Length: 77
Image (cartoon, rainbow, N blue to C red; front, side):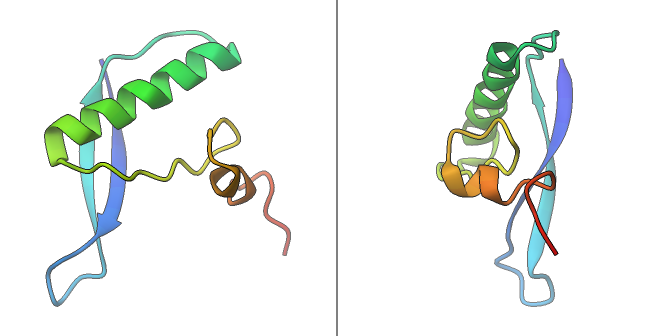
């Protein structure tokens, strides 16, 4: 098992963003396919635990073009 934070808009007036730790099944390894399986497992657990459906993965392994472009490795200042 692994734990990762999920950030989402807050419905509370004094906060803009809330953070929750999500536990999910971790697949060890460095292959891109294993990393994508971990992303899928994290998103699935977030959907189950928090009822969040529309998740933007911001990483170079994201399946969404915007997520890849927002990755720290691709940002240009």
